[in-house]
Image 1 (cartoon, rainbow, N blue to C red):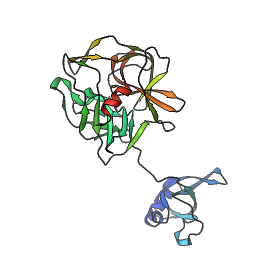
Image 2: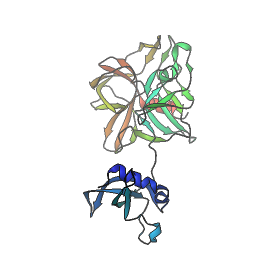
Image 3: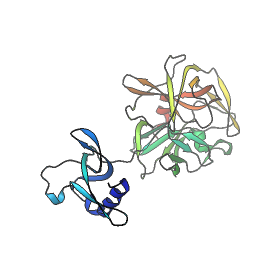
Image 4: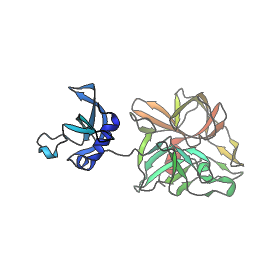
Length: 304
């Protein structure tokens, strides 16, 4: 009986002919389905954009494929299976929760991917992820991590950014990054969550009873009990003390607060989808995170 490798080898011998057939998107090797049930029979599977009953025989996916071993021995034929692809194959884009690295190797998170009012693709994260506060806001090319190949790819320039300075008080820590045309984005989507999108942009309320969460590179962290700070707090950023104000402190309930979480999007589930509530920028390892109300960050920076 032909193995998976025999089927693959034989399909590749005829690949140019097979892939050029009308409506064919791609081929795989898997179990054949008959009358809505999966069988144990291995098959060459053709995924098509649509099924057409009136195609001429030369234009149809063949009913079977003759298989040949590596040494040229004929192994008999395997049947094919034709399945509807439903939609055009697309590369999934950059989403909230993907890791971003600044030019100075500072690691953070993409809070949200979106298109600005001018139709340009953008990502939002923390300013201190992509600028060097100790060097008066110097910046360079940021990168995003692709989990498929575990490689980092360059993004575009930083278009809008909070000015963080030693001894000065800030009420935001945001950077907006241009996404080059070669990359796709999945607007308002969160990594590994395909059933819901961000449908609401809101802020934070003191002692709200919501179960807040954020995702980073496939991991979920949870927190709650938001408490608004009084006055300004001195926070060490890139070796420089910056005064932060108008943010909330939340206690971790799943996972630990730690370096590398800056830029994460604090969310909660609602009856209509996902609410984006806060922008994480810091914390106290391991029990507390600091977050700005996301609606204020969005209203001030999403136009860039």
